[in-house]
Image (tube, rainbow, N blue to C red; front, side, top):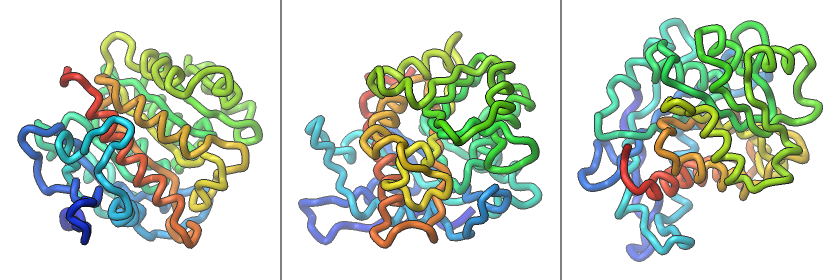
Length: 310
């Protein structure tokens, strides 16, 4: 693991930076959310750099405050972001075991985890590590333009790998699937596995919050824990230029943020990953990384909404 998270303080004491939410250990009296870096990149279908996305997202937190204007609340009074650092070389031999060790070291006070990729291979590592290889009590929600049903082992295959490992497809919901981003073969695989598909066009007929609630309800049916994968290529390319596979016509930054806050507010959701950012491809204004940092804060805002821990 790397050193603990980079913590910065705003120069204006009346404007505390969101980076001050990063702590080294759980804070009594707050809802503690664990933060892990799983910076996978080596097996990506699209060649990408090895620059650490988790570190970039941590730095971007400094650009935002802790004040939740819409709810007149300060996140500092309610939540803490416990930084467990980055798993070293998750793509290399023994990477899955190192991710598992990191998850196992989580303090019992941490009831929610945020996993920062890396490419989408981080999803397979994260869910496999979290459930210890026993998928019988877990479901999966993905917000993604792609089915991730490819053959082999890459950032295009995590859902297929998880199904092959034993995850029940009837507790998998894939949201945001886009035209011209998949294939008939992979669509048939998802259908045969019993996966629920909520394609891009379905999001135009109901609110993103309604979709989020429905997806978590299906994945978590029967009292299962839910792991949520947020693939940034579900967003419109204009807001995520640092996501290699994003295309025009995706979700807006606002829709991405609202979806994340909605799922994070649900007690059954125990982990959320944010994947598919190549820092070296981002725009000069770092809009992709900044959106990812805002999604981290939306997770915290959602967790704050929980009336009580289950």
